[in-house]
Amino acid sequence: MDNSKLEEIVAFLAEYQWIYKNSNTKFVKAGVLDDFPPNWFKSLMNLSHNELNNIPFGMIPDTLDEELKEFLMRISRLSIKVSSKEFPKSSKTMRGVNPKKFQEISNLSRQIHDICREKNIQYLVDLGSGLGYLCQMLYEKFNYRILGIECDEERVKTAEERQEKFFPTSKGSVKFVSHFVTSSSWDFISQELNKVFGIDVKDTSVAVVGLHACGDLTVTALKLFQGTEVIRAAIVMPCCYHKMAIDSQGRPVNFPLSGRLTEAMKGASGIACRPFLRLACQQAVSRWRRMTQEEHRVHGRNMFQRALLDAVVTEDQEIQRVKGGERVDGEDFDGAICGFEIRECRTNALIPWKNEHKSKWRSLCDKYPRGDEISECLTLLQTTIQELCENVILMDRKIYVEETSEAFHCEIMKILDADTSPRCVVLMAMKS
Ligand SMILES: C[S@@+](CC[C@H](N)C(=O)[O-])C[C@H]1O[C@@H](n2cnc3c(N)ncnc32)[C@H](O)[C@@H]1O
Figure (cartoon, rainbow, N blue to C red):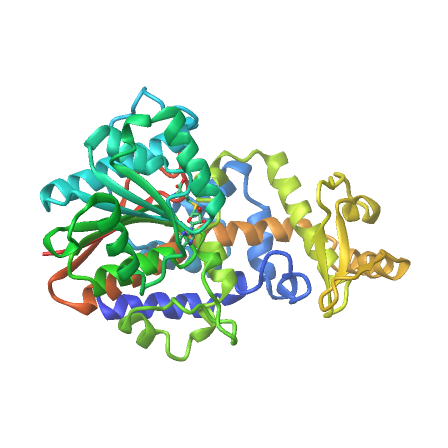
């Protein structure tokens, strides 16, 4: 992607920050309902249910407000194309694995195999191996030696129990170890590879892989790839961008990563914030299309009511979900507070709901009589830019890898349809 397109995307995201820069529990307090352009709202409310559901798919009704049309057309113009690959649907399953997870593991393992076969790689390191699903598939289908690294000791134990129960023959080829992987973990990894498979890593080629490598783990995989000669490929499916580390000024440590995006975002640093990362990994657009009118109504109302709760407490208090508590569907305050409690931020002390909260709630409801509908329109705008936000993060990672060396190449590819799995893209960094 050339720099001018990157700059245009950054300018667009900076101009429309009001759509995503507050979390969806804080937008009422932040005044987003006041910022929502009245003409956008009016013209959206005149659409049929079908027209509304099709907007995120690039269908722009003629009757829409002109500025809103321009906003939607810019999204289409700026969209980042990602190639996709189809895999045959497998009718098989794996013990203890649901069909969705099975398809994810199956497609990713085939993609890993396509690359590793070509690059003659026999040893794989699965970062964040969880319960070991991907490791077992890579062994069962393609006979790799795999070291699964997982920071949660309980999960390592469960992965070993599953191995004993379902895959006892894999014990010589699939090993699990507990360790928190960082970009300096190569010494640990190479010692483990030597210990469990008896190999001298200097004489071999390794790939790091990961399924739903959450938070910073995908970036860690790319950094290990960059800094370690014998790691010939990093093939990772990222997820949960909002779990990435945030610095003391509220900015993600690992976004932007590339020199080019960092440069393009100078002067627009507000884009890089946790709500942006959260939007990037929100439910993909396909779910919006299937929503009924009633589902939109309930979603808008719940989102508005949840944000109202945040707006009636003070800065040093926060709303928490009561463990096991159920919210009650309805329009009134007493129903809306069911399932939620107020805690003091500093001490976590419980604060009772009072009449003053109820009266603040009532005056906000009077101020925003159509708050629930505007909330759903805000969700629509977020839905239309979700893919762009995610692709900016992925593109930044690709550029970052390729900036390091001319011998490094990184591809982004969809290997599942978003209906099966909302996080369906794999990053593939390779050395030539
Ligand atoms: C979303 S889960 C995916 C698990 C597994 N790959 C799967 O798809 O079933 C992410 C896993 O990565 C682990 N994890 C996250 N960061 C890690 C790190 N830096 N080192 C090791 N494990 C990590 C988490 O404990 C969690 O089990």
